[in-house]
Image (cartoon, rainbow, N blue to C red; front, side, top):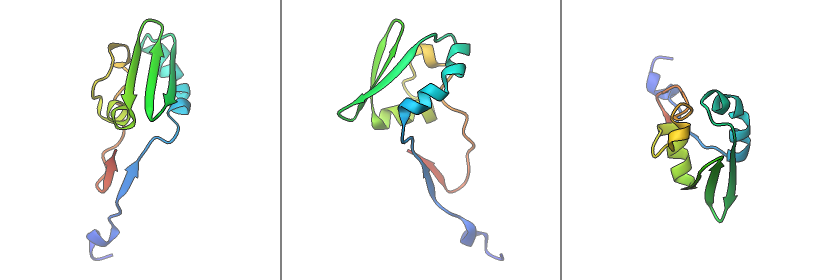
Length: 93
């Protein structure tokens, strides 16, 4: 292909099941010292509960925490942001 711009594709990464993601990250969380974490969704807000604390995020706030490390609770500093490759044409929401 002569024109690389023709190959560029836009994309978005979106977590469609945060509960499953947190379940799958259980090992990483245990290694980071979080022995128990639970996430639930109600009315578009996500509540993360640990042994000692409770945190509430909007959908956008949850994505920012996971992908950007924004407003990460102290317990999750060694888990988030997730190491995601930075690829041209890929946006994180």
